[in-house]
Length: 422
Image (tube, rainbow, N blue to C red):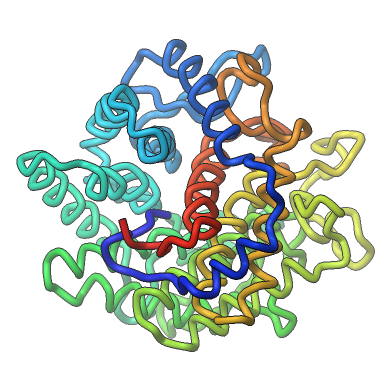
């Protein structure tokens, strides 16, 4: 999620060499030019600070969500990234305004995504804001956000509960303690709050959650289950299913991206090589998958419509006449792979090259919106949840967020800069 530039260091000599292998096309500058034009449109149409842009409605207008949704932090986070690249004060002003509109999100305990909401926004603000008074206020908000996250941490099970009890897709299982792979992206905030407070309890919860997730969410080939349900008495994993993928035994592509990114972050935060190996395992499954299209932008699920994978929802009623791609999965993966590559020496080149190829594809006409189109969003062709018949082949704010983050990371590395040092 948020790059901790003051904390971590990339491998300078490696990426100076890798940069010479890249195309000379300066797509980063072009993409940020487009981002400024698009987000000017988005800002002009989004004037209600209680409604955070998420996607488009069927009639092409911007659809927003409130502070209690999981996606609120991505819009201010994207504004911070545009400011970081351009250094133009109007983008900082917009980012600050939309970040501070999320203040009540520090008390979000209804689900696990307080990390997404508050760290993509306030976490980036902590990096880029210089005003001491604002920084002190933001610090308190992030500490409370971490406290809110820990209200869902069960010390006996050793995990943060993603959702409150709900029925599975097959309507046969009541998930009492569901944990989804997405939850790995909410752990960076906990590690950060341990750093700024000196209290290890937040990081310890993140480590425990990561170890249990590595143990129970992965198949031998490196693919991931979306949902693991735990017994609240024994703490054992009792169901491995999906909520947004094609089938319980399939691999939802964005979930695989979450795994790559999340375990890379946990390696950064702990230097525990178990997390590095888990991130590599997830990455290898993704980049070597035989169903991956040539442009390296995955279908919404790696196993959609394949033999041996049977959906529990009415797929025929939900599908289009093609298998949708998911640009958001590619954006998350590209950003995660760029960081992962910095921890692997010369072995990181294949992950770096794959991420660059994904960014080049996302920067092409097929995925990058034309100026003034797409409601102001940057990327086209993402999928929210096909089983829910929701947000299929549309722009999604989190696709933009991770795309901009990946562009910033790539720009630093190709120019021989340290990835996490201002």
